[in-house]
Length: 336
Ligand code: ATP
Ligand code: MG
Ligand code: FE
Image 1 (cartoon, rainbow, N blue to C red):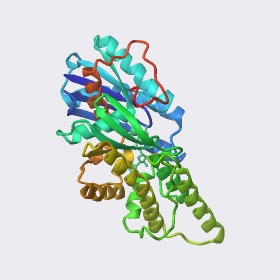
Image 2 (image 1 turned 180 degrees about the vertical axis):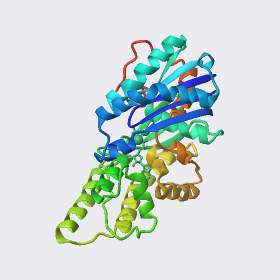
Image 3 (image 1 turned 90 degrees about the vertical axis):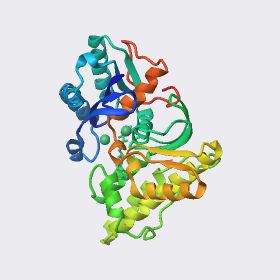
């Protein structure tokens, strides 16, 4: 079964062709990151307009690279939530018209479910149930993946997402946008104990997280240094920051894994590319005896392949989008 998958929830327009869930025939991506770098963050209206410009040509490219004709497409999957509403709407409207024109079913896919599915592509042996740490630019949650389309949140951030925190800190330190990758590289040469940064705990909710205090601590540090004319040890600060984020994410993920007892832990989303986080999880899983599944680096950020993969399992579960399918800025991962 060939699924044409469309993703436009943030600043990447992505179209892929995926066969039977886990075989990626093509994965075309047009990133707008350079465009938004000027502003230090994604400008929603620009994102929507760029999706409109890119999506049709990108679809042609994805079909061509896959060696699949329009007539050989069996269904169209699309991210319909969560994300920037105008951006998601572009993908949903386009996918609806393609599905209608081809007379094929339309499959709505939850973006974070898609991120989780990147692990199915990377690890052909992986099957639910497992616990998945989902960390990206807009979401940070620990998910109980009971089955391909049956999941619920065990713990989540009360404020900022971890990726958003990386981006904001990087912006203030002048490290670049998006900030996660550059912060990760900078941290490689730094002392992770150079700066003392807070690790927040949410009272009475041991699996919940908070990153706003950590973000504010780094911003205050940067502003104070600027006022006093002091030079910050940037590699040390990036390493200390990466350690604080990982120290918040890893113990909670391992506690969730212990509670569920599946023996399998996965990671998903843009921040899953973080080397400190990957290393810390590897060590923690070695200690606990859980099997760790890390997505390929190329599949951590937004892409169409993950939407095509999850779309296949949504299709098998009977999930279809009608002609009145809407886009949503937020949506519980349990609803799908
Ligand atoms: P969401 O998936 O929540 O809707 P999004 O789609 O914008 O948000 P992703 O594309 O999944 O997010 O991930 C982008 C985020 O990942 C950015 O915040 C980016 O800084 C972060 N990121 C990318 N690489 C790394 C890295 N090596 N270390 C830490 N963060 C990283
Ligand atoms: Mg992006
Ligand atoms: Fe994403």
